[in-house]
Each structure stands twice: as C-alpha cells, then as structure tokens.
Length: 107
Length: 121
Image (tube, rainbow over all chains, first blue to last red; front, side, top):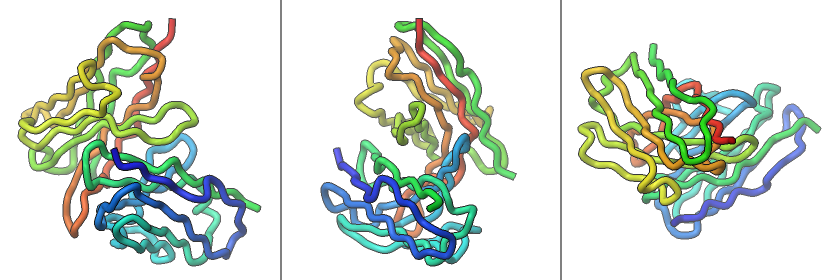
C-alpha cells in the first residue's frame, strides 16, 4: 500500500497568512494526487486534482504543485472560510489512500 | 444539480449486517465509477470500495474484503454497500462519492452528505 504522510498535522495561522501543507508518498505516484477540504460536520470538498489542477469554483488563492513523491498545497492569503482540515489523496494505485489530515486553526 | 443521497445507516450490533444505499441524480450515473469512503468519528478518511460504471470491475480495501459487497443498479441510478460481520472498527460516517478520471488524474468531485453506521452492543 502507498502511505501518504502530511505535515504538519495542525497549524495555527492568521488571516492573510500564506500557508503551505506538504504531502509525501511512500513511492512515486506521478501526479495522481488530490487535495480536499473538510469542515466540521460536512463532507470533504475537492480543491485540487492531478496535483496542480484547480477544481471548478475553487478560489485561485489555492494552488497545488509537485509530482512523484512530494506535493504541496498552498493557500496564498488565508481567508476566514479556509479554517478547516485538509487531506491529500493518492489515486495512483489500489488501495486508494489518504494523508492523515492537516487542521488549520486560528491563531 | 448533482445530488448523492445516502441512506441505510444506523445502530447495529457486532456481527450484524446493514445495507447502505446511495441515490444519485444530476449526472449520467451509468457513465461513472462510484466509490464508498468512510470516516470514523474524529478520524481521517478511508477508502472502502469502488465499482466500475458497468459493475464488472470492483475493488475493496483489505479491511472490508470478504465482508462488504458493493453493487449498483444503473436503471435506478443507485449504488449499494452490503455490510456484514460488522465490528466496532466499522463505526463511521459512510460517504458515497463519484470517481472521475481526466486531466491526468482520478478524483471525486461529488460527495453525498454521509450516512452514519454505529456498531455497538
């Protein structure tokens, strides 16, 4: 199984901050990497697919990069609605696996 | 407007069975793979199973293989998850999601609201 490791697990940040979340795969997954945002009590929402493609309707302050084993999600200027938990997901091989999540908290 | 509506969750005793359903509307259901993903309370996301558009290709996570069965009815725009031999480790919110592949990746852009399964005596 491909292990996905996110860092940090949690982050205290402020409105307007630039935030970067990292996801590392235990083996190369090409660009088969997605990012999701989840708010309490809600289903996850797709932000980025294929490592760097912005999903329709997602604000341009979100961006993704990387390939192989190292990926990043960047929020250029944190907004109040961005405080949530973020998950990476690899769909390169079965079983599909997720990172453990990164929780963004208000400082 | 795309909607995925799960049902069938509830409280079940260890060793029991449950059948989850997901009714889909707003896109051509028969064109898409479908998946189930679960999330234990306060925990991360775990992929459970997916089924191809025709139903011919099916995969399961090792944690549910042999106990869970995914199926679909394209005439009724529905996907199902039959769960048996349930244990406390199966307690989770179960999400029905689509699976698309384009732009060099595969992803899920439509999620249901989830149905909660609680396994407890």
